[in-house]
Length: 191
Length: 439
Image (tube, rainbow over all chains, first blue to last red):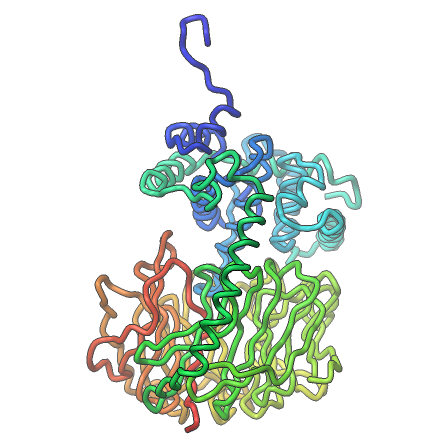
């Protein structure tokens, strides 16, 4: 209780209450999570519309399956796992019905230097060349900050696979940046 | 950019710079609106023993084991009785059986007649195995399919199966099973028309490409994919297996390269390992999909999407020369489906079925499909005798969420109402094939 007698619910309380079926608590929980989930989904899927669909579907699945969550402490990993499965489903649905990928357009940040812009362009290009599986590992590890064993749990893959995917992704990203840099040195426009 | 160098800091900064709260309030509002009308799922044990105790995996396993033991005992008696007394189901119409797979509960394979007799022939709820990519054999006596543990993109192995199917649409046994190393890529493995070889695209992690396996397990790499495509622009090329030629001598493969793999070219790859040739050259930011051969193998149809302008079209080219024979602008088109005699094509444009002669003449847009609500077509396949079309459809445009799907059959001339082949459901229907069954 606070000094004025108002009950304060912690995040764990919200998870407990949502698991028991309290929609209001789930709403508060979702409001706190949605920006992070959207950021993750946009990075992994590289398509803002698809990312919004995936996040909405993931949260609805989360609500439906909440009573089955055994350990409240594992909520984060469980939610990431649902999000990644849903993202894969959305991609499958898009591939089957549209076969079109619209790349996420990112506006340059105010105050970027020319070098910073070039860095961002090359990072974006290199990142976009990674497969969705590899992007997922990089985002969960480097953006969300999960250790690789937890990344593996969130993606439902063996820990060794997560490590090798991360290693591959970083190698591919470095190789891609190096290739761009070589092209730029010769005065050509990168593909 | 200076390279090489340590990526950790710039990558982390760049990832953080991508975070934006745009759209979060809208997504939250629509999510909570759905949650308001959505119930929660509970294990049976939670209903029987309460939430806390019911979450116990041990309790669930014990209950499942006890139930299974009872079911097995009862089923032995019931199935034995049915086998003794069951009459074979009648064959419905001369167009035989339609097959589809569905993702509603798990990816399983169904066989259904146009009159609606339906049965799941491969797979079971919760078996943890995806089955699909299926096709009927030309003689109508076989069904070939693929199965892999879920999720297939990390599975250590997968299987290609040829099964015998009887005139009543029942699988009566496996004729061949080939187990191959995984994981599987997004595009379906494809059996050769005579079901003696299977082609698929192997994982890019293994420096893979287009592979072919014979029934004795002999494998041949026909075309390299990622990391090693010196003859294509850009550092990499991604492969998608599209279709076998009707004579089983070649495969059509979509090879995407360039920035973001958005330059698709169509290649013809001989199955005997001789050199491949580029039939349709890649153009920057143009995607190719929905590839199908004409029944006589002389033409190939496909759809294109020009990414910058979102312009879409259906095309047919000559397999010998690559010369375009037909091009028609279309909205969100499917690939063209060829009538059995090769004289007509059907495709979807803006949710409606379009039928024309294969040279584009006599184009007819069929009326909007309507059941209890409007149904928007997504894909189309011909009946073996060319008198009907089977269509997958959704109850909203496919960019919407919460879409329900159905399978219908319609008259290619647009006469009469559609017939419902499979009911509305949340999961989509894929891998449709329609085959005449011999008497």
